[in-house]
Length: 228
Length: 380
Image 1 (cartoon, rainbow over the protein chains, first blue to last red):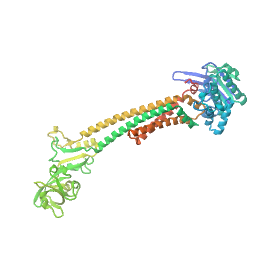
Image 2: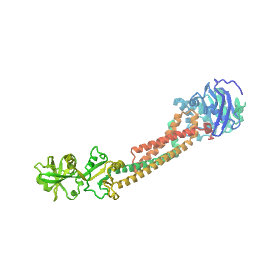
Image 3: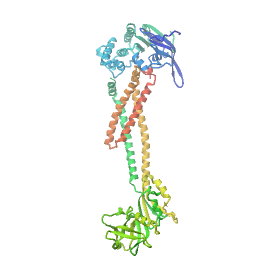
Image 4: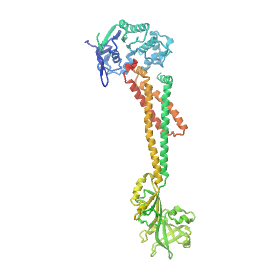
């Protein structure tokens, strides 16, 4: 799909191609994907397993560099930026299996990104509590370890952690995959509120058609390409 | 919080931390033991080199005669400073005959020596030394002499004796008499160097009749043998008829002992090398397996923008703490078992620690170099 790409937009994929190479074969997971992601919208990337959704967001998140093409954040290519800083300050990722630190409490998990950003402790604690409240977790949760939380609560802690660092782009890889429908709805409503009321750019990879229906824009992928 | 996390991590993974500490403990104990054993063997070998006196005796070619030889006077020069054998030998023992001296009208047999041990007579007949004198006074250029008791009347009031060389007695020497021995026959035993000086240029020649010495540096035994081989042959009955002088060298026991010790040390050194390789491999493996169990955690930290310094630093801190626990216990155990824990122990600990830290760095790199997203999705 040909389109004019404005690289100054928030997050831009410009002819992104990614190949997994081994000694014996090369698999083209993402082929020539170009798209502009804007603030204030919820994007759902859908497609069959193996169509390249997760690989695409790993390049958007700066975890991998594209084999060809470039990813731009506010006009700067991920090839030319410090990707540690990019992941720390500009983009947050939420996972299907939550990936909380098992040895840190709820509060400490949410404090962690601000610890990396070297925010003052007092401010960080205040922000952490605010973000936890925004996802429906009150003060009684602060001292608990992740093992003492339900799946939905863990995912909400993960969302609070993603918000605490102040990053304006949230990538979520199958965030409701391990949740029941009630918790899934709760998570989706949170994403919608973040995008529509607070101007976040939320990009969700999902198999769930309901999630796709509730998103502002649905991007369908097939064999590594965007088809619609 | 990072420090708190490290301590909490160690506490919550106590068995894993202890397994690494135990691995370090075992490796260190074995390494310290073998290093200590090698050091002991080496000290033993050094002691053998240092303390063994390898005696060499000049004989006839067959080795049957050690006294009464007629060794050319030039041979003595080999053992003097600047001589070909000077650096190779020590403790020269020499008895030489040098024709006669005139004492008044009497012709007295003259012998030269640098120690009474060179003369078989003195093994049976002890020397009575005058006040303050002893064997050591025979070494050096001072003209001193030991005389038979029947020549005592010739001694001057000051203890000196004037001797002259035949045939005409125009060359004379005044010697200090330092001792006497009891004998039926008369003879004068003059210090070797003084005697050689007296006889320089004279028709009377110094003829060493017995010569023995020790190897100066046992570590250079082969070089010494080669140098001695220029002038002597190995004393052996099969040399019957040879005109060359033989040399009997008491090195068999020394050589055997050194060979046994050197072989033992070589074996231990080989074993030590193998042990080092094994120890490092085991430590690497344990560290890698422990870190691999935490790859999801490391991947989350990486995905959140944790710097490499922090990522590696946290893991290396944990490795270092576990190492320290294992090392301390190992050092205490070694000290209790009286295994040497000096500078060598510091080196061993340092190398193993370096290896473990490198293993930690390598393991983190290996674990985080995979597809981070797959790790985070739990698919790797």
